[in-house]
Image (tube, rainbow, N blue to C red):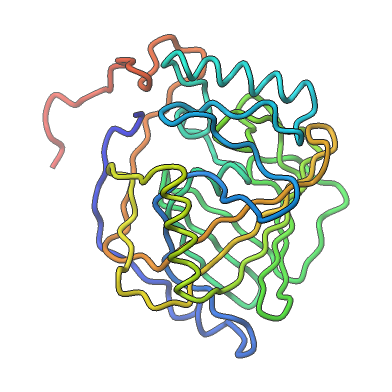
Length: 291
């Protein structure tokens, strides 16, 4: 793992202004949410996201029909690399910004803060932040960026976020299996509250399928949480990479305990002394304590 330290810090709460600014007729998604299994949950029907073919390595099913031939070959090559015990570079192990939708499948904890004109999403791993403008439009001239340009609005009990302008590149990945994307990537997120029983069942299915995260990056969930809980449905479209739009689900439950700060030491992708996959890159240390 690339993490060189995990510090437990006191849980902090959103300033009152974040809650006061939320209109009375808008659903309350604010608070700390978490899960303890990576990747998307599959939809009941329709095209499905790329799934892992084995535990213990990020080797995606490159035969998934949503992949165009060039994308399938990239997934195949990166899966073969992962199966050798040498993980391929991704935003997480390279300490890079996490683009959506990679951020959904990798991050286990998220905090939503609702304001009158903006949604702020905080993710606990590597201090990732996203800003969503409400009731706005995408600029006509958009400079691609890691997180892209996100706008949102409410449709009844659902928060809808539309994101474009996510820059492609070696670390511009859709998932943990190395699926690439082009500059035509378009993502729509739909957040809604579901009952606690349905959320527990969904979380249990995902943990059984993908395994439970038990190391220091795991999220402490509220065992007494009666619900409602938060569910995210993500729809991904990229005609240069995928044969059709596809969707996946992330189910969150209320988290308990402290917010964990994870410290990341940056390494370039071409450095042969990687700090993951059994590497041993030296981490600089001070001769004496500075406090």
